Image 1 (cartoon, rainbow, N blue to C red):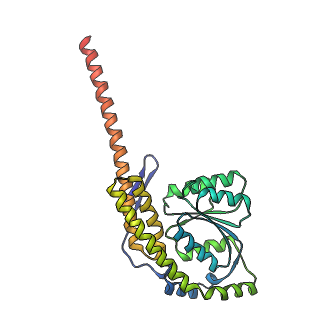
Image 2 (image 1 turned 180 degrees about the vertical axis):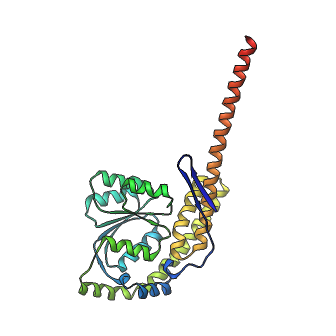
Amino acid sequence: IRVQSTPNKGSEFTVILPMILPASCIWLDEEPLRRINQEHPFNQQQLSGRVLLAEDQPDNRELIKHLLQQLGVDITTASNGEEAVSHALQEDYHLILMDMQMPVLDGLAATKLIRDAGCKAPIVALTANVMTADIERYKNAGCVEVLAKPIQRERFTEIIHSFLEPQQESVAKQNQSAQAFSTGEQFNNLKQNYYETLKQELHQLRESFSQEQIQTLKKVAHRIKGSAGNFNLSNVSEAAADIEQAITNLERCFYYSMESIEQNIQRQSHNEQVGNRSELS
């Protein structure tokens, strides 16, 4: 059970229960993917359009790129916010998928720059931070939708379909046929690559903890929280979320306690000065 409270605004409570998720929430397991496609025929519909994908994590980037390729769209990728702004202002895109936490320039700042430059392309935020206040910030910056990480395939596909047009039937059939050969192999390669990345990030977590690098620890935990669930590692994602939340709670406790200490010192100092003046008089 978690709580996030803002004075004079309200509180948001989150209850997390250990449950077996339905297949619609698992989007990188090959068998559930086939079941989803059978239950939702529109998921197989090929789309026409140009998509800019801004995502700094290579595994997530390749994963989302693969999912977009299955839908038949043209994809341009960016690994940070600065690259995303450059692409968005040089080319016309039907949709921009923008990760909110990226190096060089984060997704929020990149979105504002794109909007300030007059670009009207719809921007969808990709983020593991989906509290009400976070979503409001993204939409105020110019995002039209927010996709939570780990991403649910059904919701992802629904969002993409809402912004892009279907391909002509003959072209769509040709694209589907070409993609069918590599699907299983690509999935396996993506999974194996992610396992290697995860090993490195777990090592980085331990190093950051032992060296008391709090912000790095929080950043890596956040990264794992957003990516592990995409690869059907929900327990890993939840554990990383616990680490991130623990650090957030520590930070809040620290700043609250520091403020309390400073206020008490000021109050005590003031009282002593008043007392000294009374004795002199």
